[in-house]
Amino acid sequence: MGKNGVSPHCEDNQIHESLVRQVQASLLDGLTATRLAEVFAALSDPSRVRLLAALAEAELCVHDLAAVLGMSQSAVSHQLRLLRALHLVRYRKEGRTVFYALDDEHIRDLLERGLEHIRHQTPSPSIAEERPHA
Amino acid sequence: MGKNGVSPHCEDNQIHESLVRQVQASLLDGLTATRLAEVFAALSDPSRVRLLAALAEAELCVHDLAAVLGMSQSAVSHQLRLLRALHLVRYRKEGRTVFYALDDEHIRDLLERGLEHIRHQTPSPSIAEERPHA
DNA sequence: TGAATACATGAACAATTCTTCATATATTAT
DNA sequence: ATAATATATGAAGAATTGTTCATGTATTCA
Image (cartoon, rainbow over all chains, first blue to last red; front, side, top):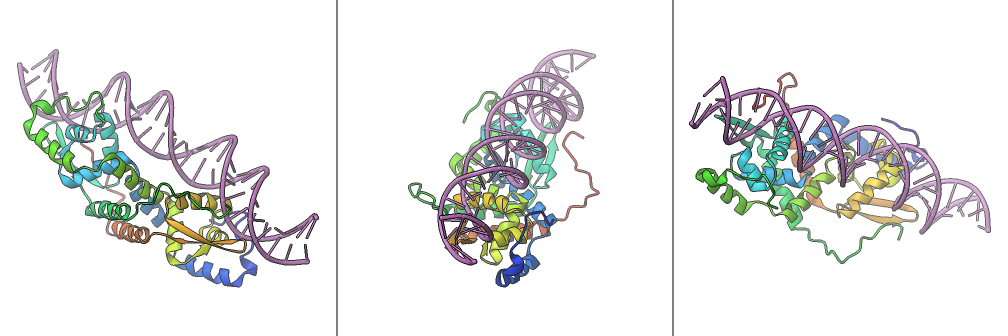
Protein backbone atom coordinates (compact mmCIF):
# COMPACT_ATOMS: atom_id res chain seq x y z
CA MET A 1 0.00 0.00 0.00
CA GLY A 2 3.02 2.16 -0.04
CA LYS A 3 2.52 5.06 -2.42
CA ASN A 4 4.63 7.75 -3.97
CA GLY A 5 5.06 10.90 -1.95
CA VAL A 6 4.42 9.10 1.31
CA SER A 7 6.47 9.71 4.45
CA PRO A 8 9.63 11.33 3.07
CA HIS A 9 10.49 12.78 6.49
CA CYS A 10 9.97 9.91 8.89
CA GLU A 11 13.61 8.95 8.42
CA ASP A 12 14.89 12.04 10.16
CA ASN A 13 12.23 12.31 12.82
CA GLN A 14 12.90 9.54 15.31
CA ILE A 15 10.16 10.41 17.76
CA HIS A 16 7.41 10.37 15.17
CA GLU A 17 8.80 7.30 13.50
CA SER A 18 8.47 5.21 16.64
CA LEU A 19 4.94 6.48 17.13
CA VAL A 20 4.13 5.68 13.53
CA ARG A 21 5.41 2.15 13.96
CA GLN A 22 3.49 1.70 17.18
CA VAL A 23 0.22 2.81 15.62
CA GLN A 24 0.82 0.78 12.47
CA ALA A 25 1.29 -2.33 14.55
CA SER A 26 -2.22 -2.15 15.93
CA LEU A 27 -4.00 -0.56 12.97
CA LEU A 28 -6.90 -2.24 11.24
CA ASP A 29 -5.87 -4.24 8.20
CA GLY A 30 -7.39 -3.37 4.86
CA LEU A 31 -9.99 -6.13 4.86
CA THR A 32 -11.20 -5.38 8.37
CA ALA A 33 -11.44 -1.68 7.59
CA THR A 34 -13.37 -2.42 4.41
CA ARG A 35 -15.85 -4.70 6.17
CA LEU A 36 -16.25 -2.25 9.03
CA ALA A 37 -16.81 0.62 6.60
CA GLU A 38 -19.39 -1.51 4.79
CA VAL A 39 -21.46 -1.92 7.93
CA PHE A 40 -21.32 1.77 8.73
CA ALA A 41 -22.11 2.57 5.10
CA ALA A 42 -25.35 0.65 5.54
CA LEU A 43 -26.26 3.21 8.19
CA SER A 44 -24.98 6.22 6.31
CA ASP A 45 -28.14 7.07 4.44
CA PRO A 46 -31.03 8.78 6.26
CA SER A 47 -33.65 6.63 4.60
CA ARG A 48 -31.83 3.43 5.51
CA VAL A 49 -31.32 4.61 9.08
CA ARG A 50 -35.07 5.17 9.40
CA LEU A 51 -35.81 1.84 7.72
CA LEU A 52 -33.59 -0.06 10.12
CA ALA A 53 -34.97 1.89 13.07
CA ALA A 54 -38.48 0.93 11.95
CA LEU A 55 -37.51 -2.73 11.77
CA ALA A 56 -35.99 -2.42 15.23
CA GLU A 57 -39.57 -1.69 16.37
CA ALA A 58 -41.43 -4.39 14.46
CA GLU A 59 -41.35 -6.82 11.59
CA LEU A 60 -42.84 -5.08 8.56
CA CYS A 61 -43.72 -5.84 4.97
CA VAL A 62 -42.45 -3.79 2.04
CA HIS A 63 -45.79 -2.11 1.63
CA ASP A 64 -45.93 -1.01 5.26
CA LEU A 65 -42.31 0.09 5.22
CA ALA A 66 -43.12 2.32 2.28
CA ALA A 67 -46.04 3.78 4.23
CA VAL A 68 -44.07 4.26 7.45
CA LEU A 69 -41.13 5.88 5.70
CA GLY A 70 -42.96 7.88 3.06
CA MET A 71 -40.91 6.24 0.31
CA SER A 72 -41.92 4.48 -2.87
CA GLN A 73 -42.17 0.67 -2.88
CA SER A 74 -39.36 0.52 -5.43
CA ALA A 75 -37.00 2.64 -3.35
CA VAL A 76 -37.73 0.52 -0.26
CA SER A 77 -37.11 -2.66 -2.23
CA HIS A 78 -33.75 -1.38 -3.47
CA GLN A 79 -32.67 -0.56 0.06
CA LEU A 80 -33.83 -3.96 1.31
CA ARG A 81 -31.78 -5.68 -1.35
CA LEU A 82 -28.66 -3.91 -0.15
CA LEU A 83 -29.43 -4.74 3.49
CA ARG A 84 -30.08 -8.40 2.65
CA ALA A 85 -26.73 -8.58 0.89
CA LEU A 86 -25.06 -7.36 4.08
CA HIS A 87 -27.04 -9.88 6.22
CA LEU A 88 -28.55 -7.06 8.24
CA VAL A 89 -32.16 -8.08 7.55
CA ARG A 90 -33.94 -11.39 7.11
CA TYR A 91 -37.33 -12.11 5.54
CA ARG A 92 -40.19 -14.61 5.58
CA LYS A 93 -42.91 -14.92 2.99
CA GLU A 94 -46.62 -15.21 3.69
CA GLY A 95 -48.38 -15.65 0.40
CA ARG A 96 -47.24 -12.78 -1.74
CA THR A 97 -46.37 -10.63 1.24
CA VAL A 98 -42.72 -10.53 2.33
CA PHE A 99 -42.06 -9.60 5.96
CA TYR A 100 -38.69 -8.16 6.90
CA ALA A 101 -36.98 -8.04 10.29
CA LEU A 102 -33.54 -7.17 11.61
CA ASP A 103 -31.17 -10.10 11.24
CA ASP A 104 -28.48 -8.61 13.41
CA GLU A 105 -28.91 -7.25 16.93
CA HIS A 106 -25.63 -5.38 16.59
CA ILE A 107 -27.37 -2.95 14.27
CA ARG A 108 -29.90 -2.13 16.97
CA ASP A 109 -26.97 -1.53 19.30
CA LEU A 110 -25.12 0.67 16.80
CA LEU A 111 -28.26 2.72 16.20
CA GLU A 112 -28.74 3.22 19.95
CA ARG A 113 -25.12 4.20 20.46
CA GLY A 114 -25.32 6.56 17.53
CA LEU A 115 -28.40 8.19 19.00
CA GLU A 116 -26.63 8.60 22.33
CA HIS A 117 -23.80 10.26 20.47
CA ILE A 118 -25.85 12.86 18.66
CA ARG A 119 -27.96 13.58 21.73
CA HIS A 120 -24.82 14.35 23.74
CA GLN A 121 -23.53 16.55 21.04
CA THR A 122 -25.42 19.60 20.06
CA PRO A 123 -22.76 21.92 18.65
CA SER A 124 -23.87 25.49 18.51
CA PRO A 125 -24.59 26.34 14.89
CA SER A 126 -23.41 29.86 15.51
CA ILE A 127 -19.81 28.87 16.32
CA ALA A 128 -17.80 28.98 13.12
CA GLU A 129 -15.53 26.06 12.52
CA GLU A 130 -11.95 26.82 13.41
CA ARG A 131 -9.26 25.46 11.16
CA PRO A 132 -5.51 25.17 11.44
CA HIS A 133 -4.80 27.90 8.86
CA ALA A 134 -7.04 30.67 9.96
CA MET B 1 -42.85 13.63 3.31
CA GLY B 2 -45.91 12.04 1.85
CA LYS B 3 -45.34 11.11 -1.74
CA ASN B 4 -47.39 9.89 -4.66
CA GLY B 5 -47.85 6.18 -4.89
CA VAL B 6 -47.40 5.68 -1.17
CA SER B 7 -49.59 3.35 0.88
CA PRO B 8 -52.61 2.89 -1.40
CA HIS B 9 -53.63 -0.24 0.48
CA CYS B 10 -53.29 0.69 4.13
CA GLU B 11 -56.88 1.82 4.13
CA ASP B 12 -58.23 -1.67 3.66
CA ASN B 13 -55.74 -3.52 5.81
CA GLN B 14 -56.56 -2.69 9.42
CA ILE B 15 -53.94 -4.90 11.01
CA HIS B 16 -51.08 -3.43 9.08
CA GLU B 17 -52.39 0.07 9.43
CA SER B 18 -52.29 -0.07 13.21
CA LEU B 19 -48.77 -1.47 13.05
CA VAL B 20 -47.75 1.28 10.67
CA ARG B 21 -49.13 3.93 13.01
CA GLN B 22 -47.41 2.36 15.99
CA VAL B 23 -44.03 2.31 14.26
CA GLN B 24 -44.48 5.80 12.84
CA ALA B 25 -45.14 7.12 16.33
CA SER B 26 -41.68 6.12 17.52
CA LEU B 27 -39.75 6.52 14.27
CA LEU B 28 -36.80 8.85 13.98
CA ASP B 29 -37.69 12.25 12.61
CA GLY B 30 -35.97 13.44 9.45
CA LEU B 31 -33.45 15.64 11.21
CA THR B 32 -32.40 12.99 13.70
CA ALA B 33 -32.06 10.44 10.94
CA THR B 34 -29.97 12.83 8.88
CA ARG B 35 -27.62 13.64 11.75
CA LEU B 36 -27.34 9.97 12.68
CA ALA B 37 -26.59 9.05 9.06
CA GLU B 38 -23.97 11.80 8.96
CA VAL B 39 -22.07 10.27 11.86
CA PHE B 40 -22.18 6.81 10.34
CA ALA B 41 -21.19 8.26 6.97
CA ALA B 42 -18.01 9.51 8.60
CA LEU B 43 -17.20 5.87 9.29
CA SER B 44 -18.34 4.53 5.95
CA ASP B 45 -15.05 4.86 4.09
CA PRO B 46 -12.23 2.37 4.71
CA SER B 47 -9.56 5.05 4.73
CA ARG B 48 -11.47 7.17 7.24
CA VAL B 49 -12.15 4.15 9.45
CA ARG B 50 -8.42 3.44 9.55
CA LEU B 51 -7.66 7.10 10.17
CA LEU B 52 -10.04 7.29 13.12
CA ALA B 53 -8.76 3.98 14.45
CA ALA B 54 -5.23 5.35 14.28
CA LEU B 55 -6.26 8.45 16.22
CA ALA B 56 -7.94 6.21 18.77
CA GLU B 57 -4.41 4.90 19.45
CA ALA B 58 -2.51 8.17 19.58
CA GLU B 59 -2.45 11.79 18.66
CA LEU B 60 -0.79 12.13 15.25
CA CYS B 61 0.28 14.82 12.82
CA VAL B 62 -0.81 14.87 9.19
CA HIS B 63 2.57 13.70 8.00
CA ASP B 64 2.53 10.70 10.34
CA LEU B 65 -1.06 9.86 9.50
CA ALA B 66 -0.07 9.75 5.84
CA ALA B 67 2.76 7.39 6.72
CA VAL B 68 0.67 5.17 8.96
CA LEU B 69 -2.17 4.90 6.47
CA GLY B 70 -0.18 4.77 3.25
CA MET B 71 -2.09 7.74 1.87
CA SER B 72 -0.95 11.01 0.35
CA GLN B 73 -0.75 14.11 2.57
CA SER B 74 -3.43 15.77 0.45
CA ALA B 75 -5.88 12.88 0.78
CA VAL B 76 -5.33 12.78 4.55
CA SER B 77 -5.91 16.53 4.77
CA HIS B 78 -9.16 16.26 2.87
CA GLN B 79 -10.41 13.57 5.21
CA LEU B 80 -9.39 15.58 8.25
CA ARG B 81 -11.30 18.58 6.99
CA LEU B 82 -14.46 16.48 6.76
CA LEU B 83 -13.90 15.03 10.23
CA ARG B 84 -13.28 18.48 11.71
CA ALA B 85 -16.52 19.70 10.21
CA LEU B 86 -18.33 16.88 12.03
CA HIS B 87 -16.53 17.65 15.32
CA LEU B 88 -15.06 14.17 15.41
CA VAL B 89 -11.44 15.35 15.63
CA ARG B 90 -9.69 18.27 17.24
CA TYR B 91 -6.24 19.70 16.61
CA ARG B 92 -3.41 21.66 18.19
CA LYS B 93 -0.58 23.38 16.39
CA GLU B 94 3.09 23.14 17.29
CA GLY B 95 5.04 25.34 14.93
CA ARG B 96 4.04 24.26 11.48
CA THR B 97 3.02 20.79 12.65
CA VAL B 98 -0.67 20.17 13.34
CA PHE B 99 -1.49 17.32 15.72
CA TYR B 100 -4.88 15.66 15.49
CA ALA B 101 -6.78 13.63 18.08
CA LEU B 102 -10.26 12.22 18.47
CA ASP B 103 -12.65 14.85 19.74
CA ASP B 104 -15.43 12.43 20.50
CA GLU B 105 -15.17 9.27 22.58
CA HIS B 106 -18.39 7.99 21.06
CA ILE B 107 -16.49 7.34 17.85
CA ARG B 108 -14.11 5.05 19.67
CA ASP B 109 -17.14 3.27 21.10
CA LEU B 110 -18.82 2.95 17.70
CA LEU B 111 -15.63 1.58 16.17
CA GLU B 112 -15.33 -1.00 18.94
CA ARG B 113 -18.96 -2.05 18.60
CA GLY B 114 -18.57 -2.25 14.87
CA LEU B 115 -15.55 -4.50 15.27
CA GLU B 116 -17.48 -6.74 17.65
CA HIS B 117 -20.18 -6.97 15.03
CA ILE B 118 -17.99 -8.07 12.16
CA ARG B 119 -16.03 -10.47 14.33
CA HIS B 120 -19.24 -12.20 15.40
CA GLN B 121 -20.37 -12.42 11.84
CA THR B 122 -18.35 -14.38 9.38
CA PRO B 123 -20.90 -15.41 6.77
CA SER B 124 -19.73 -18.26 4.64
CA PRO B 125 -18.76 -16.88 1.26
CA SER B 126 -19.98 -20.09 -0.35
CA ILE B 127 -23.63 -19.61 0.72
CA ALA B 128 -25.45 -17.80 -2.06
CA GLU B 129 -27.74 -15.04 -0.96
CA GLU B 130 -31.33 -16.12 -0.89
CA ARG B 131 -33.92 -13.66 -2.07
CA PRO B 132 -37.69 -13.50 -1.86
CA HIS B 133 -38.24 -14.17 -5.56
CA ALA B 134 -35.98 -17.10 -6.15
C1' DT C 1 15.06 37.62 2.32
C1' DG C 2 14.62 33.31 0.13
C1' DA C 3 14.24 28.34 0.59
C1' DA C 4 12.31 24.46 2.74
C1' DT C 5 8.70 22.16 5.14
C1' DA C 6 3.96 21.20 6.95
C1' DC C 7 -0.51 21.55 5.84
C1' DA C 8 -4.97 23.27 3.58
C1' DT C 9 -7.91 23.67 -0.30
C1' DG C 10 -10.07 24.10 -5.01
C1' DA C 11 -10.62 21.89 -9.50
C1' DA C 12 -11.03 17.87 -12.04
C1' DC C 13 -12.10 13.20 -12.78
C1' DA C 14 -13.78 8.63 -12.17
C1' DA C 15 -16.56 5.91 -9.44
C1' DT C 16 -20.40 5.33 -6.53
C1' DT C 17 -25.00 6.11 -4.82
C1' DC C 18 -30.21 6.76 -4.38
C1' DT C 19 -34.43 7.50 -6.49
C1' DT C 20 -37.59 7.11 -10.36
C1' DC C 21 -39.38 4.69 -14.17
C1' DA C 22 -40.51 0.67 -16.38
C1' DT C 23 -41.09 -3.89 -16.21
C1' DA C 24 -40.51 -8.71 -14.65
C1' DT C 25 -41.81 -12.44 -11.35
C1' DA C 26 -44.63 -14.68 -7.80
C1' DT C 27 -48.97 -15.34 -5.58
C1' DT C 28 -53.83 -14.82 -4.92
C1' DA C 29 -58.54 -13.71 -6.45
C1' DT C 30 -62.09 -13.99 -9.86
C1' DA D 1 -57.04 -18.41 -17.85
C1' DT D 2 -56.94 -13.63 -16.69
C1' DA D 3 -56.65 -9.78 -13.55
C1' DA D 4 -55.01 -7.84 -9.41
C1' DT D 5 -51.59 -7.34 -5.94
C1' DA D 6 -47.00 -7.60 -3.70
C1' DT D 7 -42.39 -7.33 -4.57
C1' DA D 8 -37.86 -7.39 -7.11
C1' DT D 9 -34.69 -5.50 -10.34
C1' DG D 10 -32.30 -3.15 -14.28
C1' DA D 11 -31.58 1.23 -16.64
C1' DA D 12 -31.18 5.97 -16.36
C1' DG D 13 -30.22 10.31 -14.34
C1' DA D 14 -28.67 13.50 -10.95
C1' DA D 15 -26.04 14.08 -7.04
C1' DT D 16 -22.34 12.79 -4.16
C1' DT D 17 -17.76 11.11 -3.04
C1' DG D 18 -12.52 10.26 -2.60
C1' DT D 19 -8.24 10.82 -4.66
C1' DT D 20 -4.89 13.31 -7.47
C1' DC D 21 -2.91 17.47 -9.11
C1' DA D 22 -1.68 22.00 -8.51
C1' DT D 23 -1.15 25.63 -5.71
C1' DG D 24 -1.85 28.66 -1.71
C1' DT D 25 -0.79 29.78 3.29
C1' DA D 26 1.84 29.46 7.58
C1' DT D 27 6.04 28.53 9.93
C1' DT D 28 10.86 27.55 10.41
C1' DC D 29 15.61 27.43 8.75
C1' DA D 30 19.71 29.22 6.51
